[in-house]
Length: 398
Ligand code: NAI
Ligand code: MG
Image 1 (spheres, helix red, strand yellow):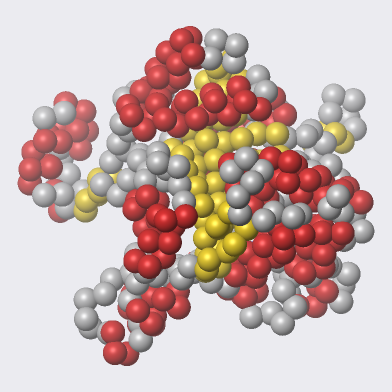
Image 2 (tube, protein in one colour):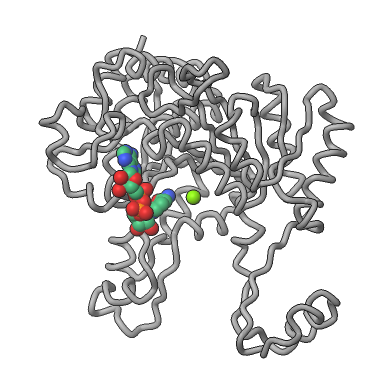
């Protein structure tokens, strides 16, 4: 296979720390790649007024596959204050480079697998019928629509007159909100398009078919949010019937799903949801398999661009540690998702097996797996450093 070029985006804080470890694992597993490093994050905001420089966008457009650590994001006012003095007052406004990436490349499909590792002390445990504790193995993959819905950014405080007038044509708005002065209204829209709803639902079914999951669950609220959730549910029903008759289609409401989550998480397979509910349900399932140290994700666009990243952020409080303590597994798992995507499935499987062995063996654990509060002293308390944890994974590679 031809040597791959991967765009590596370390970003800020622990993003850069864990990315480096993921590349070590990829190298040790024999993945033949060249890494070109792209600038993204806080430093570039401060020094250039742009946390996502055009040269980085060009790199990703050219090579199509990016491994991303994490970035630091701050509110607009703080961002403006940290801009370098010569750029201040020149009209630069901060916006998140993650949202920027998503919008620029149309990364509409977000995939977040949540799979328990046997022996992980952070696994969810419940009491079984006989009163004894039991540890259900979770193997859920969440497909989250990543560009539309409540996070689409179409919103107003004190909406323009035309918007207000249009809203007033809806009887429910007129009857229930017509009393409110326009200046006191805040409106955030939830827009779903058939095209992108179909894309996320199809991606979910295709994944279920390819990897042998028995069900796809639409996790929305179609009985109340009839138009948008209703559209996703309707599309899923049509698609199941015409294209995926052998896969069961389930329907859960997001609120009920949050309750059932801890009752029978092992019953779910692939879950598909809109932007916000997908964000919620994926964080909730991640909590059952070990939290941020284990939560990985991938984002894809229509034209095949893939960005692979842990769900966690830059954890600035741990960024300056001389010996890094954070768990590299979420980042390494994200790299495995990348390998799956570019058809290096055997390499991905070998790395996942090595992670599984280290966790089941239990001798090497990062501080989160020991349920310690993160501080530099955890190393003296027996926690593995980020590098030690990576070393252990590499040692188990076969
Ligand atoms: P965070 O995910 O960076 O950290 C929250 C806490 O989770 C940490 O203090 C730590 O206790 C734990 N944690 C995170 N990653 C871990 C790991 N690999 N191993 C062990 N424990 C881990 O979220 P926070 O503190 O809300 O945000 C920090 C910065 O990151 C902010 O500037 C935020 O905007 C940004 N952020 C960036 C994201 C991204 O780049 N995708 C996502 C989330 C936040
Ligand atoms: Mg989230």
